[in-house]
Image (cartoon, rainbow, N blue to C red; front, side):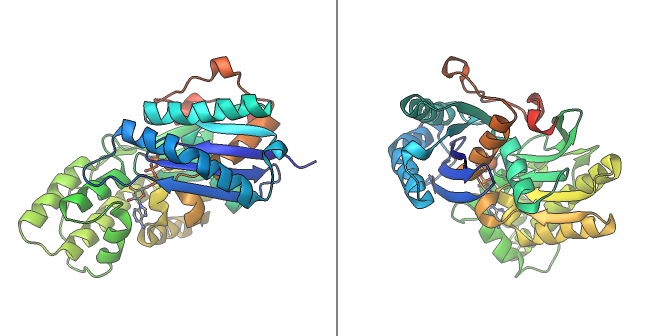
Length: 329
Ligand code: ATP
Ligand code: FE2
């Protein structure tokens, strides 16, 4: 018998619902993102977005999967890390559905889900993962029963740096894709702070320096080009060191910023130098979406883990390395 898992994602400004089978088939993956008119994301506005649109997105996901609610065997939800109000709204929907359908509930770590959906797609067993998004920049590898963070940003995430810079430069949100396009038109490299400290990195100094270049009249394409080359070079350095330390044979790129072709090219270069396999998660599975939550729900369920409603409080600060990875034990 095939198992169907409905996964709900709602850690930040996106709400997603996806249906995945225990064979790893993604049957549907619906989502919608709140785009702030100006400034950053307000947690309460984002949670309202999720409660307003969530039910419709869930219905569409079930419909597109070609199943009925009664076919669902399992509900998975993003328990953390993320914004408290968003997590609570999403968890409430998941609990309600689990109770109503009388099926088990599984709690999912959002960052772990980004890694495992990449492993599903690439058929990788044990990669070094570069996980880059609006809220995270981490280099992760499995060791001693957990996903260990080998290196990460000490201040802002790379996607956030790109989005804030884009806002200052008058671009829409999200700015990452716009910066990528403009960078292709730039060619004059300007020095920016290259900040790697051991295995960690920092992007706030680069943001300040890039804004300064703008105020000095440096053309925007050149700023974009310089920011990309410097920021991605830093990631490549720690990814390379993680491969050398761990001797792993696979390199995986995941998270929303994985959509960037230049970053992909640079990391591919790293993998070639170290003779590892390389995979960049496809655009539809790279960002925040419900299919990755559903797939991780399946993995945990098959390893014997579910969670009771009364224990299912959200964990806004749940770190990648705080979960025992039972299904890989
Ligand atoms: P998380 O909760 O995991 O931190 P998130 O909420 O930031 O994720 P994602 O969809 O994973 O959501 O990532 C969105 C980020 O990806 C944004 O910062 C956006 O600018 C960035 N991004 C998207 N496409 C590109 C691109 N082509 N180049 C660079 N950055 C990109
Ligand atoms: Fe994410």
